[in-house]
Length: 365
Image (tube, rainbow, N blue to C red; front, side, top):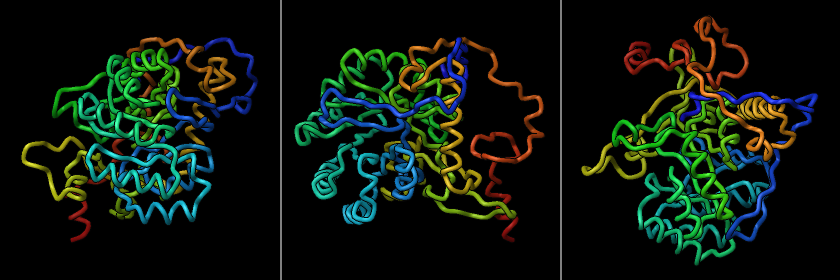
């Protein structure tokens, strides 16, 4: 099941207002010594979302950012010195290379960051499991997120190797093409349900990573058992996001691309290696302005889901959720006539799509 295949069944509620819902959660972990408190929403560790600018704004809401791994040690040091209030709401990202490990050692030791995001596309690799064991041995008290996987058996493997939180999701992202290129994946809602069940039995936790296109999808992820929800596309296109800002035919857009896209590989590795294919898209999303408005809209939607199910606290939403399979999510008969008012982040109609390269060249000529 994917998010689009279900709706949440409403239940009797004693809540009188959305304002009564508490979205802050308090978590302890299997391995890490620290206790985390905040709203469990994470900006993905992509160039265009996992930025220091995003950290500053999301920390105000006690939300997390998995910072992309392409900042230098010096940039990390300057950021933490200028914004110590962000500690506790940032994660340093790393892959499995030796250079990543050495850089991780420097950032953890000099910046006192207490959360690591171990991130590769294929979390089923034995090499990745060995890397998690190595990082856990080096940093026994630090919180470790690791992924991505989509099945219960590998969720258990990563937790037993030293991960506290497992990232769940292969292919559901808006700029990911792994399912087309490799034919590999797992419907996101089903993956979250399976992996959450496996993780919680071992005292671990899971992140639903990818596939959310609106606050309702986020609520479904929490309802399915996710402890955190990680977002890429929903955080793209803002003032705090990365990516070039361009103006085409009088409208502003920001670039957004997958980290396995040809754009990302050319930027960070000089191009796409001969033995692999690009597994990501490069798109332009309408510029949305400051991310604060989008954050408030997200949180308002989740609060609404909680009131419909009678969950006074976000961590009660899972136990209060019953899913109903549906053939259709919403009535779209007038969607193409919708006025462009308020939050622009979730529009998918033709008028909200960025112009093509051909249209851009025509406007420049």
